[in-house]
Image (cartoon, rainbow, N blue to C red):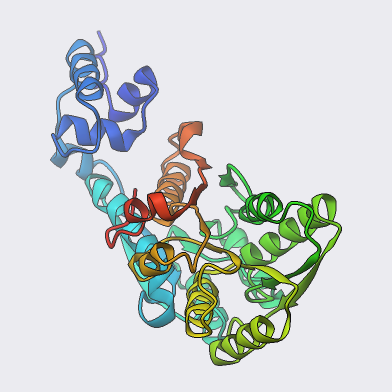
Length: 351
């Protein structure tokens, strides 16, 4: 008679409709779940005859190496990427029992070295997966085609992936337009759109969504679009110039994190805090004073740590052929206002 196979974390996760990470944390008393969830996991594990055997689990699987090719969380990149790296590192720690490791590759994704790095990784034969950002450049398309040909799975922090799409529950651009429509009502005038980088897929989508929604709902408002993502001093000059020269300027929407902070600094320095509707993206400690003095009306937060955590798990699931529950695919968006700013503007982010 054949011996019955030992149940796995996957078996328990599927039975309870939970993620594998949640099951693993509950079994090992690592936190991050409700008491009720842990009770259910422990009861199901006992019922199925599951026993934790990390050594056997590790030895029975080949190591998995995932390259994470993203900017270092320093300078202007720290406001967004510090949380992205937090989410990735948390997921990697949880999956260490499966011999999953990350190869950190810090690189400026707007430089030639970015494409050179992707090409080197696709031909090196040392990784099974890769996480990066999607950019609108033929060289990027060629590099990703090489990953696909080599059978290397990939995912994009800012655009899901071609292989497995991460869905956003709502568009930041559309949500920003809704807030501005409510604030402006029927007032005619101009809106400044700080449109990020031309080659960034997420920035591009936010610009399109915002512009389309504003045309549909606020046809009486004209949009002044600026793209100085790589030249913040110039962007600051443009913002102050528009504030001081256009009496009909009604609001500003910044589609990127660094432009959001630059916008707030310029408005505060020009003495326009509380006098104009302003919407940015993301939330971090440096923004809190601008929420408090009403320089920043609202910010659209997409939980970057949770996003990165979810994407890492999705890529892992593809490599291990373990399905990820649909709830981990949907990334929520939260409009942050002054009353909730302290909750979101935390140094450790929200996973």
